[in-house]
Length: 121
Picture (spheres, rainbow, N blue to C red):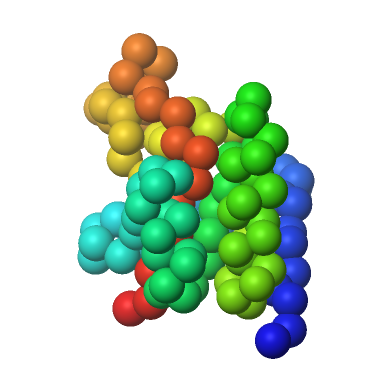
């Protein structure tokens, strides 16, 4: 089976929608239709069963074995892997924080999330 490419996501400001904005919107839409798995344990289960369309992994973790495990499962099963730099940002994108009236996550309510999956529709 062909290996899935690993994509590191830099922030690019060209005036249009960049990759991070597109990823954020994709994850928000997946939350609405209950097509997302949050958390490492549930994500690893779904990766092992090949039920994921895409994996988003936060690199801001102290435990490097977690990153190696998720990368290996994605590579073995041909699942696309996108890495982002901040676990709090990922937690905010999938709704693990309180959203204020301005549409931004409140700092006190943010929860770190190491891994999430976009599941097959």
